[in-house]
Structure formats: C-alpha cells, structure tokens
Image (cartoon, rainbow, N blue to C red; front, side, top):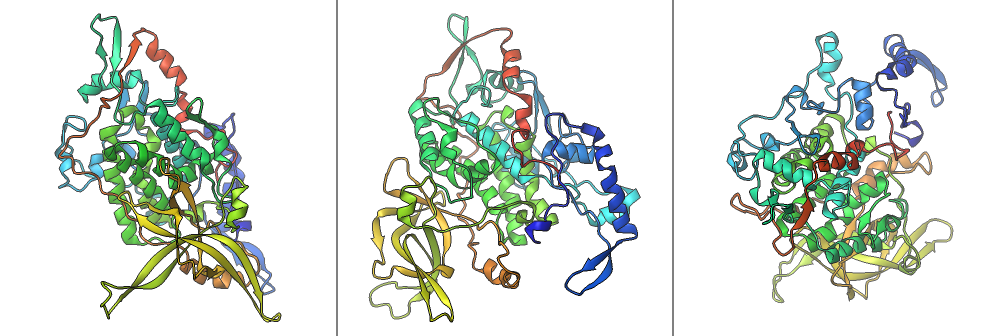
Length: 558
C-alpha cells in the first residue's frame, strides 16, 4: 500500500472530546461506506484507461484507546475496560490508590503451569480459570462479523507510550508518575499480600516506614540510568532528540513523544535496566521490551505468534510478582492480546508509519546528535573445531562495524556501485540476549569494504560502566519509499534481506516460587501519616495519565 493512500480518514479528538456524539461526525462517512458496499462507485482506472464499479468495505479502525471507546461504544475504563476479555475481564478496585487495576494474568498460562498454584507470590489464591473467550459478532451481522472478529485495533503505539511512562516513572520514583507510592503500599496491606512491603509504624507510632522495593534505585544509579539515555545517539528520523527530555539533576525523564517511547522501549531501556537492577527484575523488563520489538517485526511466522502469546503471559505474571497492583492499569494489561491481533489483522507495520533509513560515516556522527554509521551484515562463514579440522561447518555469522568512508564506482555510465569502507569489531553476546562490541578491539582490518546492498543499519549504545563496550541495536527499516514505479516490483527482494533473525530471550529465573521483594541495602522511607494523604495522592497522579494521548498530535482515529 502506498503512503499516499494509507489513511482513509483522520479524526483528532483534542481537549473537547465529542464522546458518544462522535456518531454525528461519522454519519456522512457511514453513508458513503454503505454506498461503497451496497452499490459501488464508478471509478477511473488510469492504467487501463477505463472506468469500473468499485466496491469497498471497512475492515477495522486504528485509534488510541479513548477513541476506541467512542467508536466501539465499549467503555475502556472501570471494571470491564478490556474489550478483548469482555465481560470476563479480571479487575479489582484499589481503595487507597483510587483506581481500577487489571491483573490475574495467570489465567493465560498453560493449565499445568506451576504459577497457577503459587498463592504466596500472587493474590493468595490458586488460579484454575481458562483464558477469556473472544467476543463473537452479533447475530445481526453474522456473515461479516463471524469472519471478521478483529473490528477495532488496539493501538500498539500508544500502549508502548503508556508502558514506558509507567516503567520510567516507577523506576526513577518520579512524583505523580510512580506506581509505587504510599497509597499503593496500603493497598498491599488491604489485600493481605507481600507483608515485607506493607507499611509499618515506627517505634513511637507517630510515623510510617515504607521498605524500598527490589526495583528501587539509589540517586547514583538513577543518574547512571539517565546518563545512558542522554548519551545515546539514534539514527536520523527514528525519534526526536531524547537527550533534551532527560533531566539528570532532577533524575527524571519527561516531555518525550510516542516515537521516542517506541525507541526507548525497543532499544535503550534494556542497557541501564540490566546494568543496574537485580536479575529477576531486569530479565522481566528486558523480556517485556523484547516482546514489543519482536511483535513489530516485518517478518513474523504463526509459530512465533504462538511463542509470543506464551511469553507475554509469563512476563506479565512475573511483573505481577514484582510490581505493586497499582502498576497494572489497562494499558499494561492490553499486551496480552497483541499477539492475537497480529494473527487476526496482520503485521503491525501495516498499521503504523515508519521513518526512512539513512546512512552516514562515523566521522560525521562524531559531531552530530544522531548516529547513522553503524552497519551489520550476515555472511556464511566456515567454523573450524581445531587447526587439523578438514571438515569445517558453514553457518551464518553476524558482523558489526561502522562506516568510515563511502565510494561510488561508476562503470562508464553503464551502472554504478556504492561501496562502504568499514571498521569491524569483535562481537559477543551476553545472558540477556544483547550483542555487544568493543570499539578498541578491531578485526578483519584487511577486509574493510562491503557493498551498500549487503548491509543493514544498526546503532550502538554505550555501556554505563565500560566506556569502550557498546551494545548493538539492530534497527528495523521502517518503510519502503517509492522512488520510482519500478521499486514496488523489487519489494520482496528488499524485504528478504532485512534483519529478521530470532532473538535470544532470557529465561525467567528458577526461584522456586520465592523472589526478593525488598532492597535491604537502602534505607526505608519514613512518612508522616496524614488523613488527606491519599486524596492528595489521587490528585497528583493524573487519572488521564493511564492513557495519555492529548499531548501527541499523531494520535487519532483512522
């Protein structure tokens, strides 16, 4: 589909949302859709130079979550907020946090999974329910709806944005954004879970002590976390200047947009998270980041969709064991359904706009705030077991480097070839599944040249503790721009060489049902108990922040 015709219509609610009155705005569109479906419209075909009767139907809509409610008339708040779980939505109202949360993700696990019987780490109950059944079409529209159960898209872009908000706000303990506040701790006490994180009175009984959770960070660690994001250089067109959103002095990150959140979730957060947080927290968050990265691939098999469904169920259950219930707003619950949406509606890329891929040299990157010189390629390479091995095994090996110079070879006007001169680096992979290189360890210096058509773009994120160590982030080329009419015929070839190798996903640690919830090396927080505290907390934590969409002009309905 060409970018010119990607959007059928666009509606931005803005501050004065029409709510249910959106029917008035859509009435003319619905009349035209009925005409297109029932009788068709005479249309001119410029290629065949003749007219034909065109019929069309509306398959689905793409919109953020508040607009989803307006279009579908399904309330996306309160008790039954999940349109996929329908009336089987598992929710609970937190008295102190004044919000409804959506947990019980154990019901999406296999029936023989040990976590279904783990009462201590969850809600003190066994979970024997099966997953909710998908909502079927009504009898009125049997023919259309039974064959099209996917009517309104869950918008991955805004789900990512809200999840990043929750992760960053909680890890950095940003006031008004963190989900681990005093009210959340009193909710734990009401629910009778995680006694070591419940509020405790001080010896004099005048104040309350809150133990530091396992995901808490020291001021120095928060500074390191922020410095990784501030120093990161991203490819042109992928995101805005994220560095200006990082406030190291205040130890907070704010003002980023949806595509910034997309890039942070897919590529950046893993590095400070795995370097700072304990393994059981870091592995879980890295798996969450990996889920979104893999579900946005341009090539994905049905077997991979099945694996993603199983992995996100385990990941969300592990998050339930680590983070407080207040963390689980509806946007954190919705990823449980995203793999099935890929199965029903196809690749995420067809419901998203992606920037173009560009290349530049390493020296140009040094004086810019962006990074476009990183390259990666895969080549069949013989592997020898020993010096005497006469039967080497050939396998694909990934190589990583940076462009030093570019050359265009002109063969007397017959054709041209672009060459990249590169520095190549020794690469390795760690337990979290991240590949890394050392810029001070070069290799294959006698073979610096590659064809531009052989490589894909990547970029590097510096390790916060080892300056020469850089993690490799393989970017997904976002779009095929139609330079000429002939390009579209080559699309399958172009897609075939895009990076789509399976990622190595870290396994959840085998903890025998017990995890460390408290960080004992940090002093507990002492607070004064005020009767109006929770009301104030509720006001500070903006209710609309659960699905922020007003600040981005790119949100809307299409």
